[in-house]
Length: 181
Image 1 (cartoon, rainbow, N blue to C red):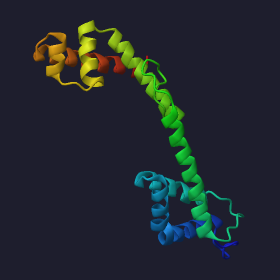
Image 2 (image 1 turned 180 degrees about the horizontal axis):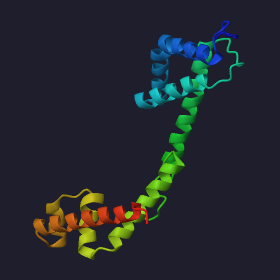
Image 3 (image 1 turned 30 degrees about the horizontal axis):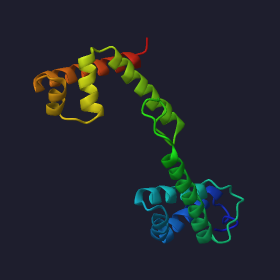
Image 4 (image 1 turned 90 degrees about the vertical axis):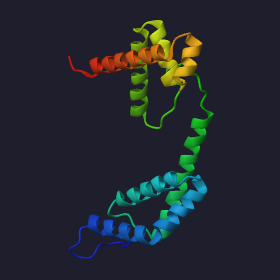
């Protein structure tokens, strides 16, 4: 990357054009490098994007002597961070009876998911036991209507009726919670 922009060219435009040139020249190799480390094309593309963003947000006075080396070193560091995060998530204990049984990378998503889970549990608690049980067995456990009917000693039609009522009630509960008062 150039140390000083040409006269009359804003530093941000120069930096952006340099990043575009780096992208065109090295992106395929960078994504391949990251894919080998992360064993995931999606993660490799995401980390590569983070590297380019990092380059774009560097201060105008930041000088980089070897842009390609900087690109790959930054990518390697971000890949290590990504692998560490994967390991932390994989090592997290799973307790389905606790509201925090899932781990998400973004706190806002985690808080939203926990709130949605609480809302679903509240809605299910308001339902008759058979309706709630049929819903959980179908939607949460992924069971088909026939196996639920056998377990609950009901007809498939009644299972569909209970699941449909539960879905309608959950939607209504969600809509009430989202409607400003």
